[in-house]
Image 1: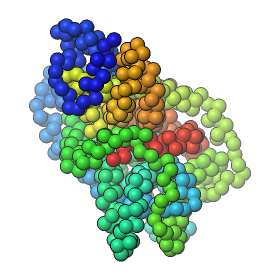
Image 2 (image 1 turned 180 degrees about the vertical axis):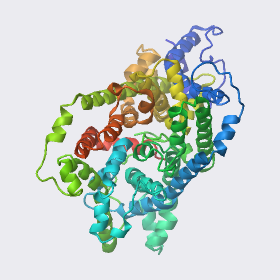
Image 3 (image 1 turned 60 degrees about the vertical axis):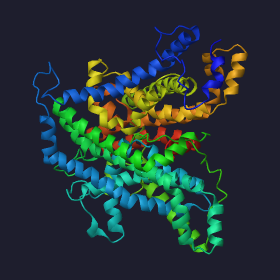
Image 4 (image 1 turned 90 degrees about the vertical axis):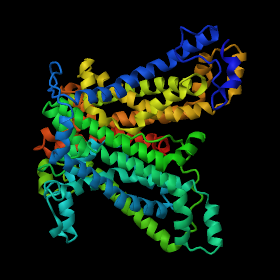
Length: 330
Length: 296
């Protein structure tokens, strides 16, 4: 009875602000349709809001509060130390190294994974036998849990194990190292394992992006005398821009939150050589029950992610997502 | 890793339907493409095969030659794990949590997306913006605060302590995917439903939800895969191994039975199996869903 009268209004954007009831303005609403709409909105939005506020927003908010105290997780919060926890975190060399390690992983992803993925996607974007099979296989590691990936590679990388034998087998025995026990190497080993797990996803994503580019554009460029390389650089890559920007976003957020692989394979060791911000957070806050301090580290981590995401969305993704939102979903 | 929900995006068609196009191919380029393709497949598959085959060997065989083939083939490792209770426990726990998390996400997400897409009310855009905040940081970042919250609520050592936060964090991407989809469904359909005497909720239930099936599948797959593979939250919430999920079980098994390498191989191989099986059955949907959800 109530909905139909607004059926035409509803489609108009931006919303006309005329006499439409507030979502839960039950008390003030006089007309029955408004009352009914308020009730429906409460019913529809209420559960999701409760869940979201209770398990996403409140924990973060409360963490800010805890972070100002010296607190072991039990009893009342009495030992107020202001920004002491933050000062301690930011001046702890282990935490500084952890941030640095995350940045190294992020940098390596940009410098190695991205060009490699683009190159492979460009190469595979052609008529070839078994391309669907290839997409499927390449994607498979991405759906495995990172715990399985971590254990698989620990087995592969055991001293004297498969990888070492492989190197010896092809005459590169001198390259064999203690992949996960060498402080200079361990971070790069983990990066390679992460690459094994996530690169296929990137390739499939980029292939999908490439297939969205009308081939007439390439043909037109070719007719105008452009070489294959020129066409790729000046037609294909710019049009692939949105996909690449999404890839970068996912990759950066992934690098900042790197935890599972490190925690299982090395626990952040040896000697803190592979500690990331997230493993540091769990190690400090959880293993040693320093919840006040751990909360401060969590807030720092949260702020880093949040600021990066906001800036990136504001400056790099804006055009892309504006378009994406208005397009139809299949 | 969990799927990092990223940005407002759509679900495009990349089921390979447009495969006709592609570059005018030079023979050299094509040869190179096949070569690279083979290399990638080998790099991807060898570690998986290594683990699966390793499960058919004895620890002595593995120690003697890590990269050899099973000789003779041994079924004992797989048999022992498949007849152990813990493996089935982990599997059931993972499945239960994933089903609850997915159900909550899809049901609550669809309801919220319906309200945010087809009702007009003050503060709608603010609410929508609020939900999108969840896209800006992954659950890992909030793991410790979340643990403290769960402890306050008495949800530790409880499967809901894992499933509910997973659902809460999946709500963002779910709403971001569903809202434009639901909005794009023509208003005439709703008018027609009203003329036929349907209420708005009736329209939601009988018309909108069935029409949204493709988008609902996408968000369900996203939520399920994320939950199934999640590691950090079960790690914090569960102490008693009776509650462990499969990822947690694999990691623990590996450290507990490090002497019995063959057993670790078999356990790891078996915990890949459900994922790989599910993936090969629903691969088109999964690849489309996971890449589509983040595609710009």
